[in-house]
Image (tube, rainbow, N blue to C red; front, side, top):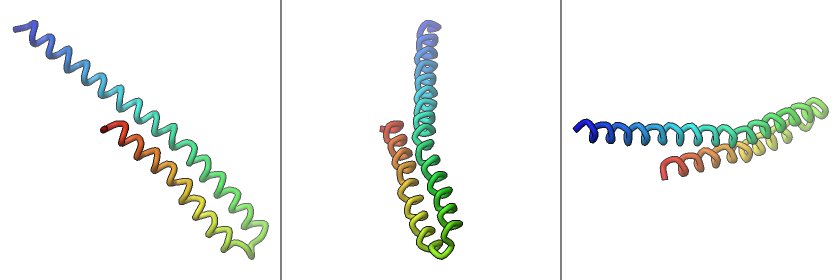
Length: 90
């Protein structure tokens, strides 16, 4: 009886360790996938503020373009999250 209990415990421990490792790896992968859009949005907003400071009369058009750029860049982070979910649960 104790041999079967030990085998079951070892199997459960191995499965738990694999689940923890998988979650850790998936979290690291999504973290790396989020770095690019984060840098992109920061650069985009910085350049937009600089453009608005240089030409205040064009601020409306620059702001609209900035928000479109942020939306497209944020879509990359969302795609990374969807891929993370697909790899984790499928």
